[in-house]
Image 1 (cartoon, rainbow, N blue to C red):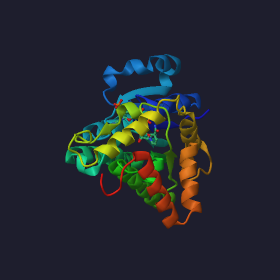
Image 2 (spheres, protein in one colour):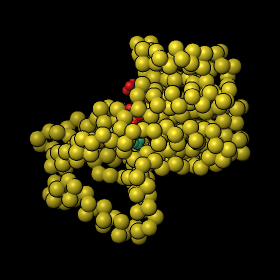
Image 3 (tube, rainbow, N blue to C red):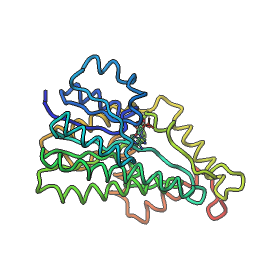
Length: 289
Ligand SMILES: NC(=O)c1ccc[n+]([C@@H]2O[C@H](COP(=O)([O-])OP(=O)(O)OC[C@H]3O[C@@H](n4cnc5c(N)ncnc54)[C@H](OP(=O)(O)O)[C@@H]3O)[C@@H](O)[C@H]2O)c1
């Protein structure tokens, strides 16, 4: 049991929601943040009943500067400025060919997945530094191996990796640890919340075949029960509590496999293999699609 405080973003579902429960069980005081918390407190009714004084639910759209400031004020007034761990989890997936994706959609993807993490971290760092605390950023298997039709999602997660790696060294002499979690595919609301480029399913799209096949491939992947999010939640708890946490934790067989292929195969061969696989999966005739 610990008297530490953790703040988690994107707690309405998936990894974020699971982490709220898991950190409460570990004795943490949890600041669970989500968009429009006032209208969605019901989500936490049981946990609030059970953990009362240890759980605080607050509104935070990570793209909203005023709300980020309010969260900092709340930490100051309610928790005496104590923040031992920040989990930047909020995010979503934008899929579809770059040409089929609008500028507004591209900005939104980067604004939520990357800038939300960057600005919230910057805002809360004084607290985390004072506590010699930890920052855990949610990356993805697409943070080190990109797939087609997900360029902006991959860009946002590759950026999270670079951001985290630099910050890890910048903050280590201040006693702050920065870690990343790299999940493969897990059963959360990610699939329901994902978005496609505005013109992805437009008949005139030059990428229509690829998009249809990619979408069918995703649907097929999701017909099974899927992998429950437990491993990712456990990884977050481990990174927050271990004496010497690793920088990266990969979760899921697919994430491990992608990593081992990258380590073991010469890059030109891996490139050939992936190109062949993507051609087959998307039934795209390269150069004609
Ligand atoms: N599930 C996977 O297979 C998988 C794999 C790799 C990485 N990830 C990453 O894991 C993280 C969590 O995703 P998940 O799988 O748990 O999916 P999820 O169930 O869809 O959860 C995503 C959460 O992010 C929140 N969110 C979205 N935009 C936000 C914003 N502007 N401000 C605050 N919160 C926002 C959503 O809140 P609302 O309810 O308000 O929309 C939701 O609570 C994401 O960063 C995702 O990229 C997931």
